[in-house]
Image (spheres, one colour):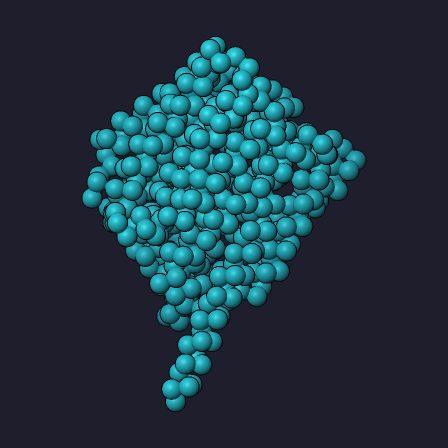
Length: 419
């Protein structure tokens, strides 16, 4: 009898480890390809047009797709098999990019193609992301939930390190179409691995309601639950403010300053982006110790203060230009340090809050609540991107990061609690 119990425990443990392994590899493959693609497309638009607004539009389209699609994606994640959603959306993304690759064989890649494909790609990716995010508590046991969140962040960040570095080199040497086909293949491989992942490892087998529910009624149910939980509202409120100031100070101004004002090469820009991802990895590695010593509120307050300093430092780089002149090495060290700290801060905030949300929200409505909350939180991002993209061609580029840093610091001091 004891042998049978031990065998069952070993089987369960091995199955859980296999789940973590398959999940991690699938995400690494998919995110790695996406990282290369996103870096190439944004840099391609910036180099092609030289316009901060056109560059910002690629980011706006990505953000808008999240805001529009996420509430419906959450309903799908609650009502449809999460594994099926993950596999199908990976396949659809692979097919989309393969079709784009074929089309660009006879025509040049123009802005209309980029904007349309970016929107569709992100629609599928958002459905995939919500299904995976809501499935995490079912992939592993409770004690492994923080671990799989940390691993997920490490995979995402390590892919982001290699993506911009390789993307910068390939962008300078090869055709943009290579980025597209690489990402197409990566989505197919990710879908194959998801097929072998057990999405019901930690499922409680509770009966779900079988009656058909109007999709908008279903969304309203999620909104009602969200409004009734003040702590959850406060967590998403932090995301709202962070998204706005990050979009206003980092997403558009930082690439514009590095590429168009300081005139650093694509390779150097890729290295700078890589340090942001390194910071994300470091944050994921230390999150367990941080949560053991501090509440998530204290972590968020400290990290938002560090973020505000980093934003101001981005703006100061332009002012320093008149004293440093053409010392590219100093600029690279300066921006790498800023992006490393930025990555650590964002990683700690993201993992701490999402871990808390996953523990708090019941499985039956987790998809709706997370997707609605994320959509609300990201509404401010396209607004910030449009503002930044419009103003950056009209006013000195350093103003936006400095204003954002000061604004975030004021918000942190007034509204983020210590406990």
